Image 1: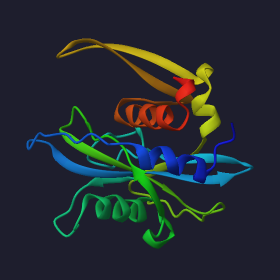
Image 2: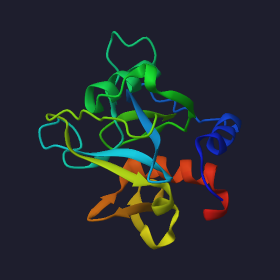
Image 3: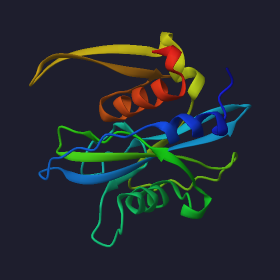
Image 4: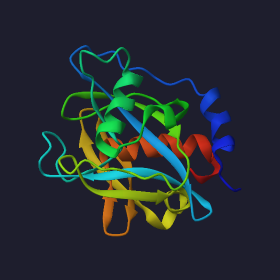
Amino acid sequence: MKLTVESIRGPLARATPLTLDDPGLVPAGVMLLLFPKNGELCALLNKRTNLVEHHKGEISFPGGAQDPEDTTILDTALRETHEEMGVKREDVDILGRLDQVSTGSRFSITPFVGAIPGSYAFKASRIEVAKVLEVPLALLLDRANWREETRFEQRGLATRYAYAFGDHLIYGATARILTQFLGLIAPASR
């Protein structure tokens, strides 16, 4: 099955995203951006610099904490995507929203999925982005690139997926968001 923006739009529209109910978490919005490159659909991620306040050197989606001037958490995700990657909000076709996830650093992340045209000229922030990663969805769906992490958490042992991309490892909240997304768009892969 060849993945396209249109083949992804339907499963996202039918999903009922979960919302966290913890007022102690800081609201944050991220954007899982899809775009065509070399005949396949890719996801935009970045490696964070060591200059940022949280999650230094980690692989993440463009996004961040909600500011007081953000009307909605979607506004946050779009503003942060522009600040970090130079992607204009009017260039993003919003396809849907995924489950909120929490982080150990006390953020409640609301992930949105959007699409942008191919050959987009990213303008990465030197302060926030050390490297732009264009990750083919086919690579993320290939089990050879999956890594399992088993950790002891409050509720006991939990197994989570991480994803290898070259010499990078996508783990934590970013990997949890990817796992949900991939399960929605290609349920047979899970």
